[in-house]
Amino acid sequence: MTALLDGVSEEELSAQTPCPKYSLGDLIDHIDGLSLAFLVAARKATLPGDARGPSGDASRLGSQWRTRIPARLTELAAAWRDPAAWEGTTQAGGLEMPGAVVGIVALDELVVHGWDVARATGQDFDCPDELVEACVGFVNMSATPQARAEDNGLFGPVVEVPVGASPLDRLVGLAGRDPSWTAPG
Image (cartoon, rainbow, N blue to C red; front, side, top):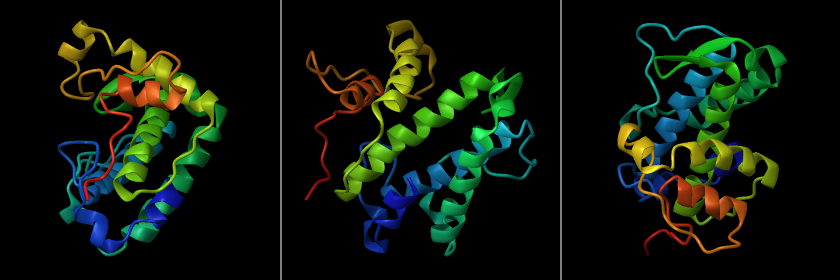
């Protein structure tokens, strides 16, 4: 993710993304917020009352986002390397869940939004299949019509992919994105 964000130009912040509600700047702000939320969750702490959550609003990026977000991503990765992060329960998004579930949700957010950033900016995206498959298992649980009706817009409608599609294409399709999406222009 850090390398992808490093490849974003200031001019691209207003670009469209595969997330219909987010410009690239909005998506980057979302990544900043979710990185903080999942860092705090890994540490079994709670966000301060005035800390912003993972919604996306490019106007909140500020001038230091290019150093703040990579530093936070580094902390996030280190926090989830601690086996204690995966044990017991923690909170994310206002919900108490097992640490192992929250860890997979964090991974899914970074993988799917990494793909989103790469597609919006024309960058290459590569993620080990075993990480993608872990995300597929998680997102697949939310791919049923009933789960989608209850997910409050977390994912779009499933986009069907061809039999034999790559694990990454299956993941983004399950997450409601068209694997063939390219940035306009």
